[in-house]
Amino acid sequence: MKREELADFIIKNLVFLVIFIVFCFSITEHLLAPKFQDFQEEKNQLRHAQFFQAKTQKQNEQIQSQIQDLKIQNQSHLNTLQKKVTFAKLQTIARDFFSDPLIKKEKTESQGAFIEVFFRIEGKSNGTKAIFDFMTKIKTMIPNATLILPLEIEKKDPLTNSLNISFLVKIIQLKNAE
Amino acid sequence: MKFSFISPNRKFFLSAIAQSWVACFIASTLVVAMIWFLLDWQIERFLQYSNQIQQQIKQEQSHQNALNEQLSFIQLQIQKIQEAQQQNTSLTSAIQNLFDLIPEQITINSISLTDQSLIIKGITPSKELYTFLLDPSLKAIFAQSRVNFFILPSGWYNFVSVNKITSNSGAQQ
Image (tube, rainbow over all chains, first blue to last red; front, side):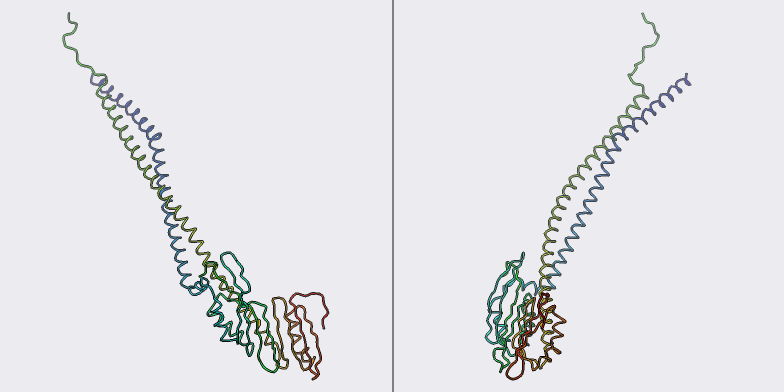
């Protein structure tokens, strides 16, 4: 009898064991495995998103730093674009090099965010050197100013060195210059 | 009438072995369910956090666009000033070189310089002086160059020199 009971015990346990293994395998494959895969995917996506956010932040910091550097290195030049150049300022500079300088605003042209103001400068000097000295002075005081043709030089009195000089100066400014 | 000398034993629906195994099945099912819900909850958290980060990324990208615009504008301003200074340097240098071409013996009464032409009026002691000293230099620079001479009572010559960058049909004197 004992032998039969033992055999019965072993066989029943084996059967249950097999069923248990199949059961565990099934629920692991059909329930846990896909869920775990979803978990991994979401975790990877989150990691990528965090990496991308950190990268974007770093890029923004670099661009901000670049902007600051440019502003510091070119502060005076950038400031000149934001300030309107007045007749008085040009007159003051021109008086150092020409006699009776006459400044006239010829025209204003719009170029996107910038405007170009053209001034005609007429005056008298004792030689052509005054033109170059004037432009050298303009370069330092108004770096956004450019000498523009036509340039006209005329000697009215052949007995003297006095020249009548006329030329254009173009000044670039921002539209919202003050 | 009794058919047995002993009283009947109680019999359960499931044997002891079966009860043990059923308990095993239930326990493992509970463990699996717990793991499943844990994973599900974590996935939800990941999704929420992901959405927050996506929002922040959008804000950062929008900020980056604004910064890039600002950077481009500053670079454009710097470029404009550099162009202005370069133009100044080139033009003053060209004008200086032009004045340097004129020999001392020739007196200039007027110069009119435009983007396309140069007109010089002056006085020269002789036509040959102009032809040998000034004319070759002007012809080297301008596509078209012609000069007219007008004799003065003193024997010197008034001249009008017209020089153009683009060549047109015309007689050259």
